[in-house]
Length: 149
Image (tube, rainbow, N blue to C red):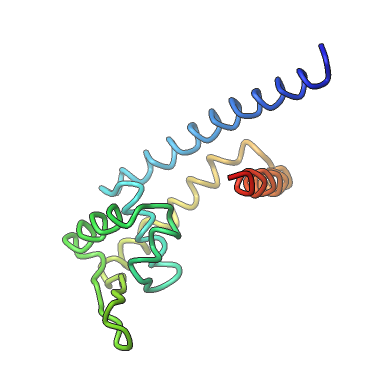
């Protein structure tokens, strides 16, 4: 077999293995999130606000990879649950911030440590040095793929 064919085979195998690993890890994370009566998108928005503070609605989608229409829907649901509120910017009324409420903070205070531990356990199939190497390699791959777009 030629080198070029071997390279293609290696690339295809990497894609399949990467996809299967992602699906398995993501399923563990989604199962954990559902225990708290949240979906992954709701959790992502709350986690962003919990760790980074208030954010303009327009920027939330960029941070957690969602369309603006989806953000509006998710923010509406979280607002109804009492986990966040919308606040107008005092300097530019076109900007609306999502702000986590005390109830939202309490929820995240209660669930985030266990969630972080579950993630730690899920990826512990790799020792910390391997996790660092995987992170490095996946960032490199992601940046290269992004530049190809």
